[in-house]
Length: 444
Ligand SMILES: [Zn+2]
Image (cartoon, rainbow, N blue to C red; front, side, top):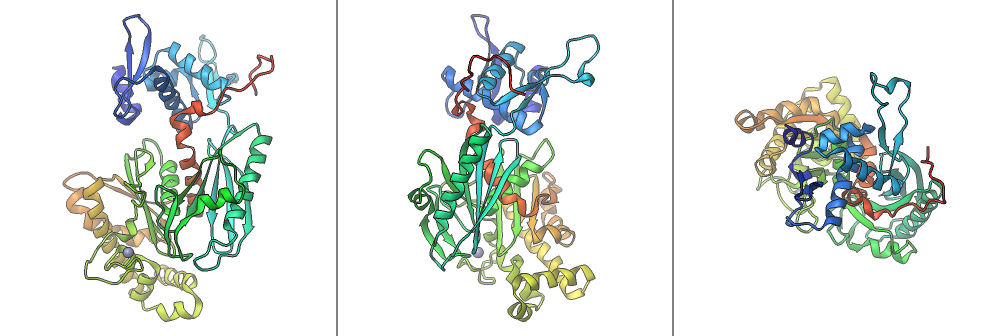
């Protein structure tokens, strides 16, 4: 019965198998990828990670909740929580008046210490760089911007601006007795695993080693710095905002200056072998079709990207005179007014989007699609086409839900911070124990 609960509460990738050893000690053995006989310290880190992720995803929990959801015995849970507490990562909440149940002892609730572990998320735009400092509980501690001059194809003073944001974040972390664990920079365009910005159509960058430049500008060598695609990061944040249980595989498509996207599998960005995965906007929907700015023909973006939609709605001239973003606002206003030509364009965009998603469905079998950017506001018109195109799959195999993103423009940086903290939630022992000066009292 317990095993069934474990399965339901935590999917197979959590790899949790409670067992009693020959010496009578109960251990929570973990099935680690490719390592059946993990050494005890690896096992311990793994179990600490499981408890931390539970507290991140579900908020305040009782020890009993943790025991039930993981199948661990009370002694194991106590032991793991003591370890996490010694690192300043979790704290007990003394049960308030309403928390006492019956005649039993008051329930002791446990939660993450809010501002202990932090990640800096950075967004680069043409004229400014914005840094947000997020805690492991998703709390936004600080937001700050620096003006930059981005010459076309040149990084300009971006690296210095980011190094300054890192220094600011380190100062704030110190003030909060927190640990800055990562800085994650989001850019529009594909980014490789080596942090190389391969090609940014928005900035004219190609093969730019941004992390080296940020370090050369003075950012500390010990801080992990990563560059990720902005839509991939947004996908992760939208995934995290979904109600539990979250889908094992989720697709995210975002309309902005182009069509970005991301695939989230088992709570992580699916980046592929070299890091360039998840470019859903460049799925081929017509191999002889319209030219896309990526150099291919018939990509999804060529039809449902802003230029594609405006061309189909015969608003290209308007875009040339008032600018693309203003023309997209006009597109949307006409859609809301029910202007037939624009409504037809939006409905057809749904069919095209559906055809693209059908191809992806056959490869990664998602159970949810989240639409972001201007696609979120068009969902009403897109959804019929998507469902129609997917019907041969969803009716025969498994359904797929379509939602609008909940976070809007906040998604990119929130997701970048979450991504930066994943390694910590895998192995919380990367935060060392807190030195306590003789006092035994727990912090409030
Ligand atoms: Zn393309």
